[in-house]
Length: 219
Image 1 (tube, rainbow, N blue to C red):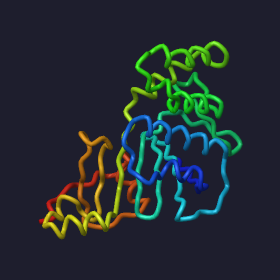
Image 2 (cartoon, rainbow, N blue to C red):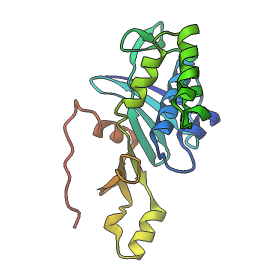
Image 3 (cartoon, rainbow, N blue to C red):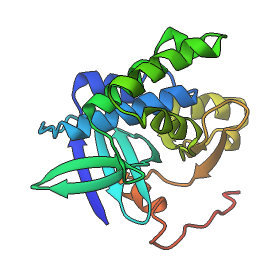
Image 4 (tube, rainbow, N blue to C red):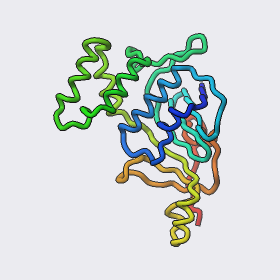
């Protein structure tokens, strides 16, 4: 297993750890792309617990782990990782170079007003222009990102939420330590934990090559 850990700067930290929880796939893609671009820049910063960190884990599973104080979350990392002279390079499906230029174009597409327009032509036109001028596989790249399984899971130690639930007699509906699986309101659910976990524990929980953890009733 290979692990690459990076301290965050303020700009990237604000994107990865928004004030409100992650709510949709577009936001997940923006986080994935910004994190990938940041890793490619090979940052060398002093770790600041208030800004957090990114850890890229590459093994049979490939995931990004975002850790800040007692809030961690993880998403799948869909790109192939190559390393040369201590510098990382990313590819998708082994034939699309995922460099800073490709990432910048992808971010501009998913954040553009045309992405939310009712007319599909408004969305396809800028993609066609990029395919014609820069990368003929750009639509394949965007399409696969949009349909991929992102594997979102978050660990939270939520003292305020737990206290509110406990005061109402529902502490087991909002445990102090818990996982939030998925992010949209119609899909998300919590798995309670009996103790606080560290970032390395979180990585181990999701590592398919280590022993599984078991659920148990706390009552």
